[in-house]
Length: 152
View 1: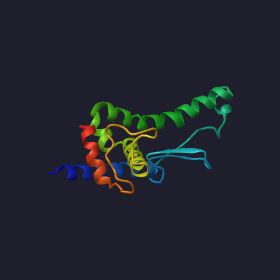
View 2: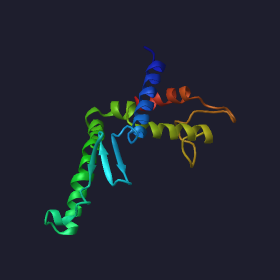
View 3: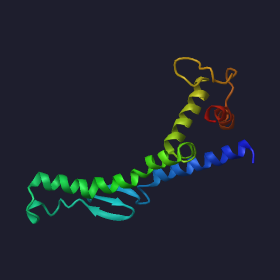
């Protein structure tokens, strides 16, 4: 299997995981419904419990609100989101290079700056910038092939 084929597979996985990140609210994976004041985690609707009020439990108002917002809104979101840093820690460069949407966005920004400015940096040329003729457009494959020496 050639290097260009592996880079193509890598680009496909980056696009799929980035699309998944942006589609999470539509798929009800992680979403907050501001009209109903409810959070939705993995399709399960979780009300904040603020409609009942503190009189039902006997807990003072601000303590009741803070406790319910933490337990019903923040904690269910923190647990699924904490999976991504753990994946990065345990799998290292495999996750960051193949699946992480943030890494894909950084590579895309680098590609755009190279395509628009003809260099990777805003303030001057770097030693690893490719030599581009004025007006020559760079393709994503050329950018990926020049990136493989930096990533290896």
